[in-house]
Length: 348
Image (cartoon, rainbow, N blue to C red):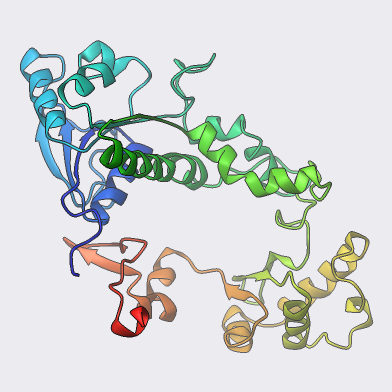
């Protein structure tokens, strides 16, 4: 087996911005043949084509405001397995390439729809961006330091995690069903729904009384001193995730704090967190990031250097895994996940 798992799957992508093209990239990376339909002479993103996000596709130009362009898209849909679009609700219907028109031509088609607010609801027809969608899910309120304003987590959590990735998952689930049943489906992927799903663990912790709604006061939001970022002597930073007792013990040993009375006892007790944070802050500030990396690289203390974008591409682990590549002169992350053919030993 050498072909990627989606080899032979045909996808039509109506050009949009952000999460929909990310889903198209994921499908193309997995071997699907993705044809992007753009308006003549233009790209939907105000900043133009993105050499990474737009990779791996065939681009055609059709004017969806002209009958010939609509006919061309319907012809593409008739031969496709999947169509994905990222317009506001009702736009493709008005253009003549909505689900009803496409499924009339191809009853097996999976029609994937990507929006921020979803296909219905009070906000469905209003504009938004990653930050505004996150604002209504509870997630944005939880990200940031105690006593400070919430911090946008780039646009990774909404556009790409809760949006494009969930769209790709949804269309693949529907595609499996379509191949078994012979009937296509409409996939309504909304960023607000996807972010809610990604926050499932936090909702579960809240239900058990293990999560406080005060920002920066919890186990995973920077409230705990053993799950935070610390400044080093050179102004660089390290990330610490020593949650479990054995990782905590390795952290203290590496920092030279194994016998420090301020670090004795239950590190999970929030009453002790201020003292623990003071000890860790002082310890990390005594050496450079590179020196701490030497201490912790082979340890199970869950400590890692905070790398910038350029450093990340040169990180030895990333290099060993081929996590970055260069296409057309543009450095970029390699497709993920990886698809590995089983060996005879795997099948024994």
